[in-house]
Length: 251
Image 1 (cartoon, rainbow, N blue to C red):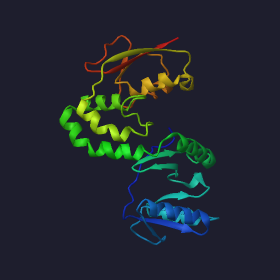
Image 2: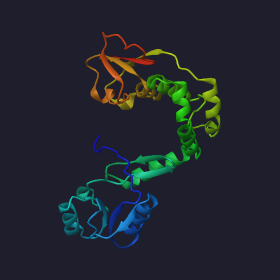
Image 3: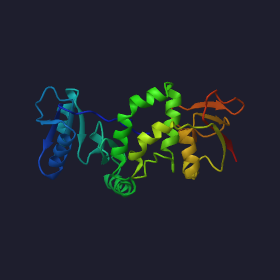
Image 4: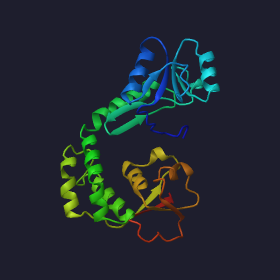
């Protein structure tokens, strides 16, 4: 992973935009859309800057000497951070980045996702936010609450994010008190390349509470597991309470 993706809150914060023309104007609009204040290069309180100049080196050096993090148009080698292509389903944000390798590729991927992800995603996120207190009351244990929500948001389930009507069913789901049951699945790998995983296998890895694996399993495969999943050698037993355990074996 070449970068750590972060979502930075800009509401009311000064952000430097230096340059002229369409590129600088686009950066300024984006800053304002995120709630930030566009300021000049001499603003001492700003900690982020966008530079769109034909010869940016001198400006970039001056900003970086003050501890400002800089994004430079068309110069990924000078960037402290890159700007992803953004899909906005407020409050859901999906960011696609190539780390500056190809903005065109990031844009086309985002456009494909635009057609795939429904406009109702934002409404579903807001409905779940409003139901947070009710969910805590019904499932006081955090792990049980997460398992119930994972089951409800699964493909084809009552709150499937790709279902345009899912937001309207949050209240009904809470009343019925959805539950999830334990499951153990086994994946026999055909290679160490994560691109050879099927979509179903990738979903299992991404949702597993525990992963039991051969010690020789490639790190690239294990990187597809959920970050907080328990990872154990194959001889170990799944932890108590695990709702989805994946067994990884080499073919």
